[in-house]
Image (tube, helix red, strand yellow):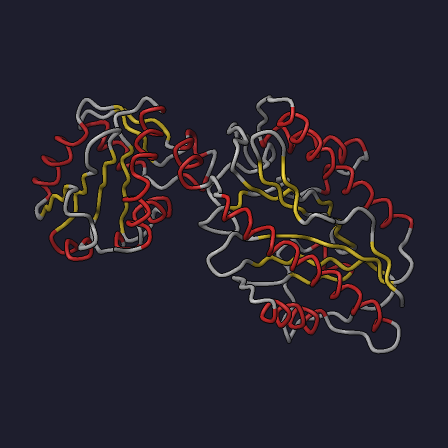
Length: 398
């Protein structure tokens, strides 16, 4: 049994309770050739076949899969006590699907008006078909958060270990860059390789990066140095280091650290303080609400951070939301982000979800400044990682 199906089998009672709490008649998962990552997260990679597939998870009773005969063998791990219906011709698909959905209120993977692209896994045409067959569709957004994006105690522990290791590596990398800046400047690409080698030593894995950006390159939000394009890290500008990694099978930690190579300019020092205050405004709002037993949305935390930047007159130099979800499915997960910028994400930051908080300002061709920590929501408080996160702009020797 694959890990995803085994997890679904093990956690089916909990998931069915979530479905019942959502007051729907089931969660209908759709996929075609692996295009719906939410379906893959719940059902596993065996759904990646060459034909359409539907799987209904009701609030009680066995799940039902509707698969094409060509792909039926891929579903050999589907538990025998669950239902697997096989179709060949389009007429039988319509008949079987109609019998499955008619008269039911079903959660489906879409977001109203396309506001949350991570959740838009059901094409408009499929939604039209389901509605024509008699289904009423509602967004699965809260089911996705509660089933896919709530961390376990082991997830939190793994994340914390990774976060502390990453923080140590980040401080070492910035110190190395500063020590060499005056006499033997290190290249951005060389420093990135140094970080990856330290990840290997710490038995951490990463999907890409890190982003090592000196001076004007830090204003390029997706910049990663290469052997062909890599600046020397010399005195006179800020160095931004964005790095992310996890223990194998664990939860990602994602941090951004910054240092002045040599004495920082008044402008750069002020920008750092502004970004730190924006970060702390979001953290304080989230922490106060959670400790007070009140709900808080990621959108509200984004707005709090952006107010600080707007008051400084730099809102036009922001280019993104304040933070992204982190969950077991990736560095950028399915859960609620810190976002009232790219969209208004109304989801509440419920206990167990994790995310980044990383406000930044970016002056094209000049500099970029960002500070990033991670947060996990607890029942009565929040966990911020790493423990000793950056509170002052680091100043290196040059």
